Length: 445
Image 1 (cartoon, rainbow, N blue to C red):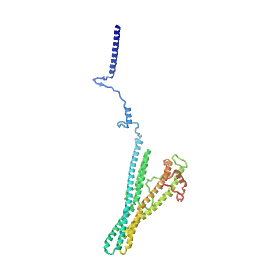
Image 2 (image 1 turned 60 degrees about the vertical axis):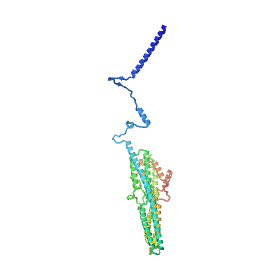
Image 3 (image 1 turned 30 degrees about the horizontal axis):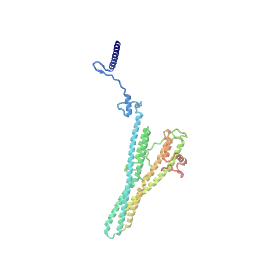
Image 4 (image 1 turned 135 degrees about the vertical axis):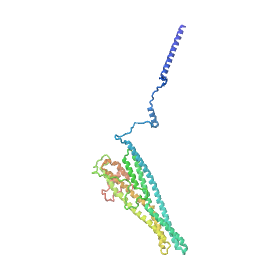
């Protein structure tokens, strides 16, 4: 019994000691976590400092947002020692200028396209109106002549006079409209605007290519500006004061590119060596022979065709109003006792011939054909100047890459590289006289 009490007391003492130790541990733990009191009875809370920089940056990168209040200095702006702007800033300005030019070029494409359609409608509407007026006048003149021949008394004088007067007015109106139409040549105007829209669209694509390749220079901006102004001068939009002469004294190729300063001729060429820019003496000789073929055959042939089209257009432009005016005088004397038969012939036949000539001129669009020949001659002249400017460049490194330039020339002429070499090999060495065996350089036109 005593032993049992002793063990029980020992158990209670051990239990009380363990509970007291637990209480002390809890009190110690609570004492550690309790805030400290400082003078004045205020609490001093010392919280751990959290580093959230990495977390914020990670969240911004995942969500695609950027904090405008933070400044990232991973790529600091580059300032030159003399205080000038960095190349990146200047490159951004060059890109901005190219985009501005490209927007202006796109606007001009739409303008020339719309005005070209409008002037093509002019050609159709004026042709239909003039022919309708001319044929109506010829019909009235014929009816008046028939009525005058069949009339026995003075009762038919009033209707005949009305027919004669109406026929004369219609002929005079048709003559005036013919003179205006032949002066402005709507079909040629429409062809000019189509060419301008095509060339502006080509320039727009070249600027896009320059921007896509990257690293454009200020020289390319200046060149684009000069090309835009040259196209504006070559294909003007207004009619009064700026319209191109439709009947020039001599036929010249169309020029729509800025004239570059001529560089000095190299002495002796490359001497058979390749400087790494794709040029060698063989390629230079090949380009010179191609230029000779373009001058002797392609450009000369289109200039001859242009002269023929211009002469034909001049004859038709003079003939149609003259015939219409002759028909107007004939209709005045229809029914006259002394000139009745001849007046009827002139009043009817001359009017019909005037309608035929006008239809052949503007329905056949002879002015458009002349402008097409002039534009094709200008295309070959541009190729000549492009090749010659590369050959005359003193520093070969400043030329366009020879292999790339050869491929461009072949594509513009519609030939493969092997066919281009065969053309140069088969061309005559005589530059002044054209040989009958020489073939044309272009397979497209």
